Image (cartoon, rainbow, N blue to C red; front, side):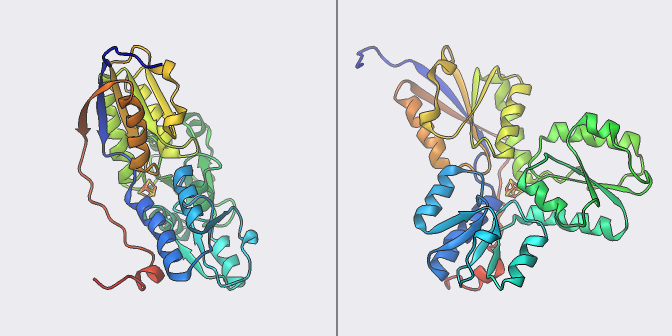
Length: 324
Ligand code: SF4
């Protein structure tokens, strides 16, 4: 219905930083570079990052996404491991089959794998704070023999956990957790087991921390917050929870403009927008475009911190980098 009524004004507060982190950029570029070097198809074990738009775009360029190595044929096509990391058994199986592998595991996830290995070598029992079933958790637990790592998902778990030897304990964490929830779990573990060892704070990555910090600043001053991201993206889900806890009455996770349920935004005068680390800026723009069709947007950006993190591509891909 065309109307001559003037569009109402909507204040939009953009959180910064938002969207792609250095690990996601590296993982996506790894697939693109592999396609350029080896030609299509290249196989990718698991969604390279948790975003359907990204996955569909790479699929259109020749990437084939699989969940297990058994789906990869014995030919010369490379297989890329996703940013979330993989259990040790996966590269071992690939080596046995002589598959060409490229590891796009985020270096900050690899760092957690190495921490867990060091604790294991020092014969410490390891607690992993994280969410069951998330591929990063599966990958981290799979670095060590079964039973070496106990997953703790909540404060209640931390209160009930019974170690073999409370004086020989260590903890590591998933990289994409809620900073505040994790701090509470660590506090319980430290209270119950004062000799537990772990990282200085936790292993939550810079990108997760910074995106949550920006949301905490914006959430109290808006009527609703959109988190652009996928339901299976851990850091996007955490942004939605952080917005709610920081006082935003309506925090909604959405992937595309087509997902907007306009009744959710009835009466909203100030709208916050952020995006999970795996959500491309083009989707933020698409959603803002949908709002711009109904409102005159008055846009402000609230910045928590400037980011300048960059991770080089996996070595085999770097060696093929075009000369400057
Ligand atoms: S969210 Fe953090 S750990 Fe995950 S890919 Fe990005 S930088 Fe790496």
